[in-house]
Image 1: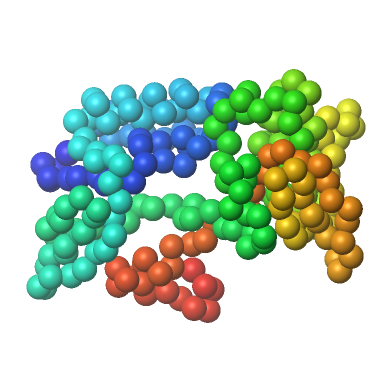
Image 2: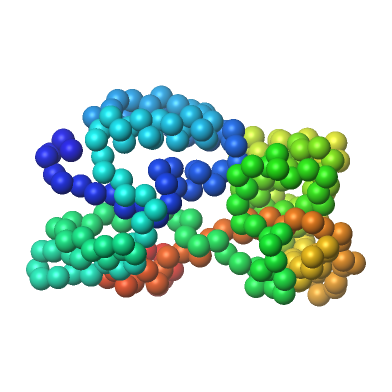
Length: 248
């Protein structure tokens, strides 16, 4: 806007993207940043809802055009200096394309029997909906830990974490302290060195190494094992991938 350029932003979800999938009142850790045409955001910690409100205010005050609920399907070059951006709704002719799609990609699947059951989810927005449930959270990163903690705070939930390693090694210090407290008070149980082998309507099957474990009674499964990088889409857009590192 500062340089009088015509700009359109295409967003397949809503303003906030991945953050909108966070649980309610999740504390987001960030750093100070200056937004051109808006001013300085001096947050160090901010609630999910406050952060989304701020972004919406930035869009409104800056007069940005953000087409939400629209998915980019392909980016192709036409001529020497133009691109055609094809979405599920229309085509755009543009001189420049900025890909700011993050690393979330598509949620990685377990690829086990029963994963398509309605009780299996890959995000958690409203933990208070789940009460008196037997819950398994799969994963050992910050998203998994935060989901397990939020679910353990709800009435009469039994929360277990299935993690393929023998310790949490890549989570924020604050989350490490919180999960340690939850383990000490037996609000959460961690099943170390386990993998999900199958999911049934009322149970889950895990394995420890090559040995199976007795089926565990279960009513909800939440999977937080990362996402599949959009490598195929990037290649279709003409982005070269450095195969040495496996990332763009």
